[in-house]
Length: 60
Image (cartoon, rainbow, N blue to C red; front, top):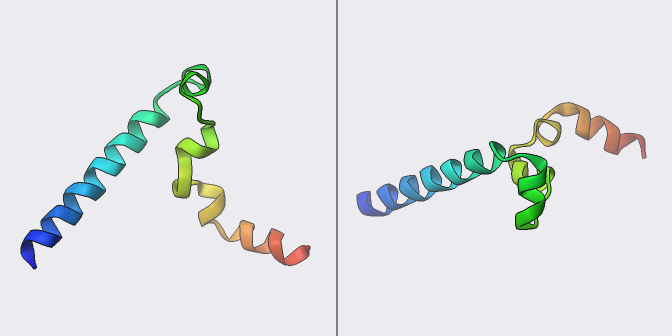
């Protein structure tokens, strides 16, 4: 059980480190590797985590 927890923590740490490295790249560098700025943000986007996203969806 403890080993699975440590593996999960290591995976999350690696994921965060990779995401932060992507966010440091310029738009041209991201384009070179085939991803957009929004893809680099992924689920970490402020827009997606804010309540304004839900309000906008309700208006439709």
